Image 1 (cartoon, one colour):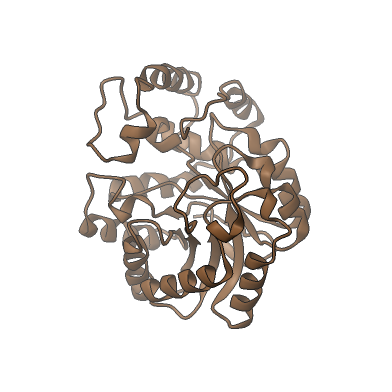
Image 2: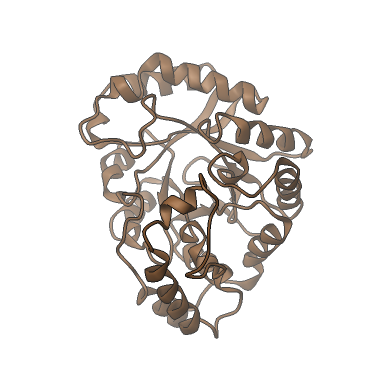
Length: 322
């Protein structure tokens, strides 16, 4: 496993992190707690030392599983979590007042709840689960961040940028008030490279690349006939026959990169890691086989310029979260 600096925090995190949404079990169906715990433990054995979870992942269930494994680890595993919007609307609506989304008292209370779920005295990285640039000058979230840091309950702060809106955080990145951003970045969604990543490099802000496998399409495991259980997030994400559009594009990417070492999923993770602004990628992992495959990416080394150029030709502007 290779390690990278998480912006200016001084933390060195594994370049393959653990995205813990799926182990919450509410919106990603087909898993179970026992398998999730086994996968979490295996990832730590393989050198993974960064886990991203959230209070909203099945109302803290993901946090509880993460806390159990971190306590057993015997060495430092960095945990990032997120405060959900109070109105439970993702992404944040344009014009939504911060009083409806992140009022001061709510930010404090949510952090206290996450501390209890995780069983820790300090959260390594606390994040706002949505962001709206109109909140930049509001006082509530700033005071909450300052007070939580002063109390020792949170070490570092960041935000999770709204779906496909990387430019919405540019002012915040330049302000010095956050340590990290979490953003969608994958072989299809390459827009963070244009403005966000250079800003993060300039201002020492760490980058957590989320959805690196496009909610599973870039694993190559889906087909046009794939069916998801009712209530599974992917049934909504790939709704209305969207797999008919996705699968041919995935097949084209797979064919074009077939000479590059690794499975399609590994190649796509290597693409994300090719950008120097990226501190860690956080794919979801619920099975040992997935953990072992993802954690093996470090051993494959960086992509060459020619290999990276192939990925550049497969950018695809879409937003399936609407």
